[in-house]
Amino acid sequence: MKLVVVGLGYVGLPLAIALARHFEVWGIDIDTGRIAELSQGHDRTGEIDEATLAASTLNYTSDPSACPAASAYIVTVPTPIDADKRPDLGAVMGATRMVAGMIDPAERPTIIYESTVYPGVTEQICGPEIESVSGLTRGRDFTLGYSPERINPGDREHTVDRIVKVIAGEDEETTDRLEAIYGKVTSAGVFRAASIKAAEAAKAIENAQRDINIAFMNEIARIFGAIDLSVWDVLAAAKTKWNFLPFQPGLVGGHCIGVDPYYLSHLAEQLGHDPRVILAGRDTNDGMSAWIAGQIHARAGKKGSALVLGLTFKENVPDLRNSKVAELVAALGDHGHDVTVHDPMADPAEATHEYGITLDSQALSRTYDLVVLAVPHRSYLEMDGGLAKLVAPGGLFADIKNGVPGMTGTVRWTL
Image: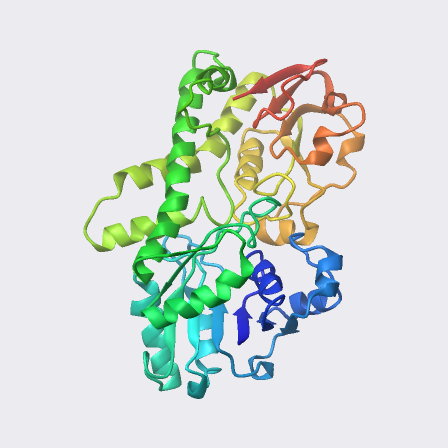
């Protein structure tokens, strides 16, 4: 089989690299700069190292016409939300129309979606769009499949070749084809979902469940904070029970957990159902940046110089998508602090473009009235002399994720 992977980001590139070990694979991305970097052996996401890129037989292109007729097209483009927190299917529909123009009906290919969507999108929106653009007939000239992505940026344990892949096709023959493809990739095997809608829904609830659990942790952090009780001390005791779920409080950003619940709530609202639990969790998590900034300001006791360490949405990755740290920076500025931001993992140009934030590469050579460890990158935790040296006399160190619980030599605050 010849395969085409559409979208070579955090999801598409690792998948395409894994598939290329077993099939002839073409990776296509509309970002010509991305294609140029990958062709030269550099992955800006940090998910694939140079040696692996150099050894791969994956073909790169930004030109759909350069791809051969394929047995399957796998769509791995982002599915963000818009300014009104509604699903933005623009990238998915753009990729769908691209694929529609590439289909050779003689191959009777399968178009597989990995992008996170709400149940019904693949069959009720994408399928008809392919038919409209191509003039072909679903079932006769092409089929549809779905296999939700489960990539966790920076996670070197749960990689695409080690996790169970949920698969679903519009019929048994198509599901067999998905199993033949993904079964070659992962050592953990595949799970044949009952339907495409079931597979779409599974992805949506996986992230919504995690979001709700983190929202509970954030809510109790706010409750306990009102009585000067550290949530970390509470969790240390609670997690000794065998069935306690070890979720932690914090800022919830990124491309999945902070976004996907809105896809589920959108479907609920279309059906006339009020998704109170889902949206309550989202409201709690979306409000944490402002609340944390207020707590830090109150404990600092004054306006002054502030250093925020880390801007990416999680530690040890360069991913800036939907980072809630940007909101924290803005909120600290609103409280009157003169904020400097440092992050060795983030791309400075992207930080400026996405958030209007200028990263200061020399920030670690000065001291500040307030130092906020927002993202505990490994490089921060391993700093010579520790992070306390960044705090001016009488200053405050705010450790949002309890990254350095044993810190001494300065006043420390955490959730």
